Length: 269
Image 1 (cartoon, rainbow, N blue to C red):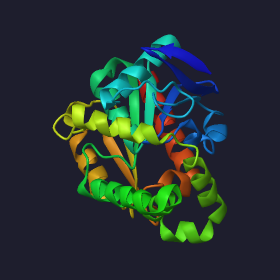
Image 2 (cartoon, rainbow, N blue to C red):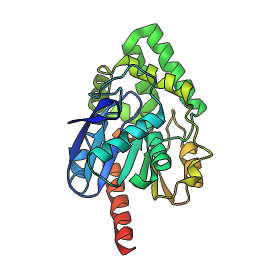
Image 3 (cartoon, rainbow, N blue to C red):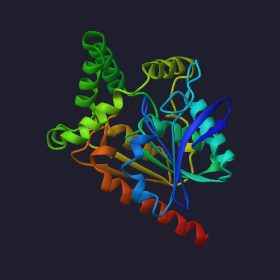
C-alpha cells in the first residue's frame, strides 16, 4: 500500500490486528527485512512495515535524507492511518529512527524495540563502511555484497544457512545505490548523535543485540541500556549485526512478550 506522507508517497505493509507495531528497516534496506517475522507477529499485533523515503517501493526524492526526516515521515504515516500510538521497532539505522521518534514525537510512542542499534556512529561502523566502499570500488556490486555479508553475519550462520544468505544477497542486488549516498549527505547535514539526549526517553524500551556484532559493537547497546531508565536488554550469543535474520524465532517471541507485558501494565494503570 502507499500513502501520501509529507512530500512523498510512502510504501507500507499493514497486516494483522491488535496493538500497532511499526517495523523500520536498516540503511539501504526495505520492509521485506521483516517478511519472515510478520506472519507470526501479525497473529497478535498489527504490523506496519514501512519503506522509508528513498527505500524500497517508496518515492525517492532527490535530496539528503536525515534521521529527523525519517522519524517525521513515520509520525505522519501514523496520523494518516489514524493510529494514536504505536510500538516502534527498528533494526540498525531503523533503531536510530525509533529513538528519534521517541524524542521528537513522544506522544505517539508506546514503547521502543531497538535491534543492533547505536545512539551515535561507532568507529567500527565507519570502518565497515570504508571496507564496503573499497570493495565496491575494486570489485563492483558483487564485491560490495561479499564484504557486507562477511561483516554482518556470524561466520557460523554463513556456513550453515547458505539459502538465507543467498536470499539476502539477492535482495541487495535490487537496492538503489543512490539511497545510501543521500543518507550520508543527511549525516553531514544533521550528524546522528543522540548520546546526550536518550536519557530523556521514558517509554518502555527493549534492546536486543548480537553479541558478535562487528558493525555496531554490543557496547553500544549496553550504553543505551544505561541511559534509558525504563529499558531492558537481551544479548544474543553467536549472532552478528544481522541477528534479526539469524535468530528469527527469538525475535518473534521477544517482541510479542514485550508488547504483551506492557499492554498488561497499561490496562492495570
